[in-house]
Each structure stands twice: as structure tokens, then as C-alpha cells.
Image (cartoon, rainbow, N blue to C red):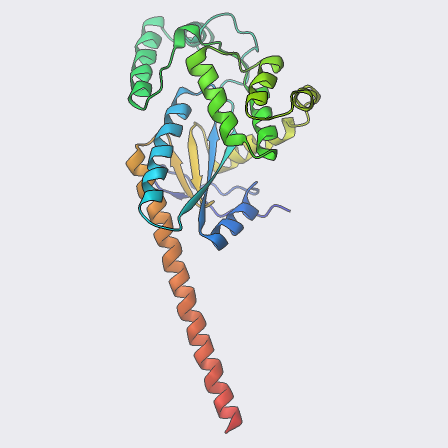
Length: 277
């Protein structure tokens, strides 16, 4: 059963919404018990900033993990569609899509894509918008839910991003997705059957509904410990600093609880002494 999550506290974004449901309350409870910070990431495979944000978050996470012993971070990706009305086989590349389908001037799109390509290169990603196959990503999100159930969601997310932005692969057709899934260890026959059945579609829609309840209007969007919201592809140091802040909040809460327990123990001992006198 899913309980209501805590309202997000703004870190580098403003949000005041309070979702009614969450997919990860149980995960958060376990994480708090073992000292692992949970990070839920709303993302779309077709979002160039999401891949860039992934790299920046990973760099920030490594900096955080290297700063002390017994630190851990658990990552889970959630579905978000930037353009759910996109056909699976859109005729054209990203320039065509943004200029024709979204109505943006071609010169403006060219300048924007050049800037994004440069930023991607700064984090080691060789974007090639010229050979990108723009497509509908709902089936890719369904595949990510399948991968999550088999413990390879992070590996698949990386594979899909690379296929889409660097290799010019198609991430909308079921046959292509089955092949990408097989690369990370998913059974092709079972994967194809699940994708064609639409079995995972409700889970995609649930992720999207929760995003709406949180007030998420763009991606990437990071939720730390079910309580702290970070919007956008922030710098690595920002992610490292926020992870450190979350850890310090936990340590302070643990210290306060320990103090209360000691006080209660001392009070109980005093009461027993009086009773035995």
C-alpha cells in the first residue's frame, strides 16, 4: 500500500504541491534505516538535458560518496513524456521536429542545438542531432519499468540515452527496444510480449500522475529522500552539496533521537529506583 509522501522542500527549485501517492515510500523507509539516500529521477529519453543532467548528477554523487565512508545512493528513474503526441516514425530529425512540429524558427533551433551539443561535449557526450530519430518514447518508458523489475534499469537508461543521442538509434519501435533490452540482459521473447501487451503502460501513467502532483513541469527533476526537489541539469557540485545537506539533516535527526532515547532511559531508571526504595 502506498502512503502519502512528504511535501517536497525546495532546494534549487520552487514547489509547494503535496502529492497524494508515491511509488517509493517503502524504499525511502529502508534507505533511511541503512543510511542510503534515495534519489528518484523523472526523465525522458528524448530529453537532451536529461542525459546531460545524468552525467552531472553522477559526477556529483561520486564526489559525495568519496567524502566519507558508509555512504550510499539508490537511484530510480520515473517516466515523463515531453512530447506524447509524437508519432513513432516521425519523418525528420530534431531540427525538423522542433521547427515544424513545435513551430520554432529553424535558425533559433540550429543555435539552440549547437549550444546543447557544446554543453553535452563538456560532460563527455558526443551528441549527433543530425542522425537522431525523433519518436514517441512511451514504449521506451515501459521497457525501463521492465528493466527495473529485473534490476537493470540504470544500465538500460544509459543504453537508451546513448542510442538516441549519440548513435542515431530508434527508441520508439518495439523490435529495436527488445534488442536494447537484450543488451542489458532482458529476455527478448518475454520483453516483446510485455511491450506488445501494454502491461507496463499503467506504471508509466502512474509516474506521470505523480509528476503532476509534485508540480513537475520539466525534466530532469530529482527528488532526494522523498523530500528535496532539484530541477534541471545542475552542476555536479550542486548535486554533491545537496546530497551532503540531506546527510547532515539525517545525522542531526539521528542525534536528536538518540538524545531523547537516553533521556527516556534515564527517566525510566529513576522511576524504577524510586519504586524499589
